[in-house]
Image (cartoon, rainbow, N blue to C red; front, side, top):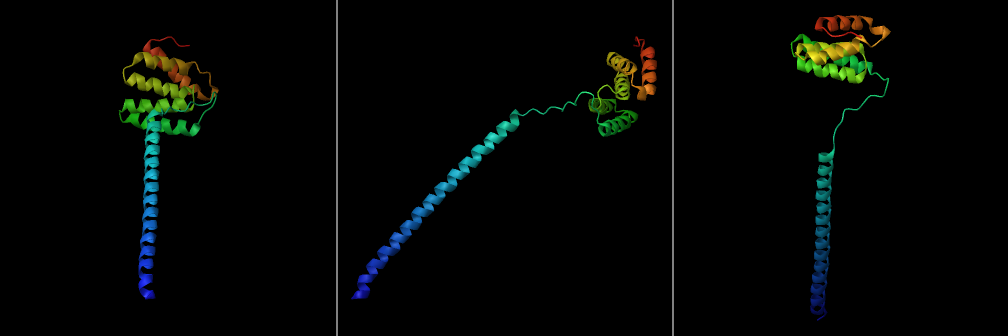
Length: 157
């Protein structure tokens, strides 16, 4: 008789245990869903922040010069200029001037690129800046800039 009385008790225990597991499983599923919702919300916020970001070219410190960038940009600009891609050369020469503001060689190269693109006024502006630099290490660039200003009929500084 005892085995029969145990059986309903055992069945009740198994059912209550299964019910507990079901409740625990349900709670875990709810937690997973909450975590998934949080992840999706964070992904949306990240996407919104990325969309709001504006990337600006970092401005160099006053009187600073990154000679490596100057050399690399000047070389790449020269390669493009030699191949006739003056617009691309212009971009590299602008990078060179950004790396070393006021560099007469970079200004001279910008003048040449603008002149090749038939923008006489911009070319003249850069030639005049190069001619007026007063940098003792770039006297050749200054002389070439003076010649270009004369050729374009501008007024050399």
